[in-house]
Image (cartoon, one colour):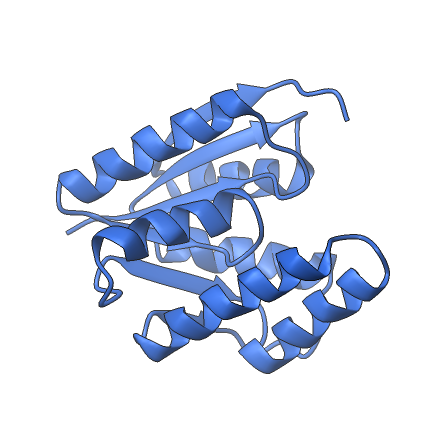
Length: 167
């Protein structure tokens, strides 16, 4: 079985991206492979949901977090309090990650803060765990580009989808 990393923008999405993501994740799972996700909103959330929908035991899923789930959940609740995301987004993501943890597919890292530097460390871990990468890049997202660059440095196949969306 191959592990296929999924990287995508969390702030902005579009209908075309959602169709592409669904098709690509379904294709990965149909051929008997698994998904590696970074545990964020939007692309990561949907890829995780699709994988769990097909394999509720988590056998085809790895979700990498830069911190423990407790620290990660506190960060997302804080961001909701700041108005960066909604409380509903935060709680849906946390509920999903709690399920991922229960089925044994959560891979927490040792960092003590959820910040840009540690998100980029998480991207490194996603690439380390992956045999290939699906990248869904909206508006030249720097985080997705970081993951693409790391995958290319590793020498793994990258399938890139790009989108321009007005924010």
